[in-house]
Image (spheres, rainbow over the protein chains, first blue to last red):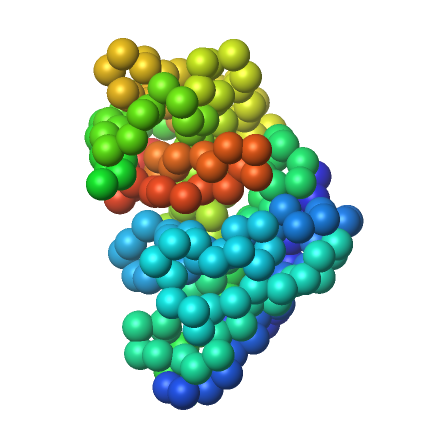
Length: 108
Length: 119
């Protein structure tokens, strides 16, 4: 199975900060990498698919990059509603579909 | 508007069974693959099972070891997860998710159904 490792597991940031979250795959997954945001008590929400494509309705301050084994999710200017947990997910091999452990973005 | 609404969660004793349902609306259900994803309390996301649009292809997470069965009824726009021989470690919120075709990502999620396995 492909293992997904996110870093950091948590970070503290302020409104307006640029935030970068990393996700590394245990083997190459091409661009089969997707990002989700989850707020407390809510279902996850798709942000980015195919490593860099922005899901409809998602603010343009979110962007994704990378291919192969190393990927990043960038929030260009953190907004109050962006404090949440972010997960990456690979779909290069099915089954299983696997998620990273999550990165919690907290208020500094 | 795409909506996925899970039902059937609850408290069950170890070794018991439970059947989750997911009612889909706002899209042509019969043309989309679907998945179940779960999240144990305070933990991350874990993919559980996949079913193709016509039920011809089904996948499960290895950890389930044949205890869970995914199915769907396209006439009723519904997805199901039959869970047998439940264990404490199956305690989680179970999400019904729509699969976005060949890239296998989840573009819509239900609100989740809590399954608690405890005596």
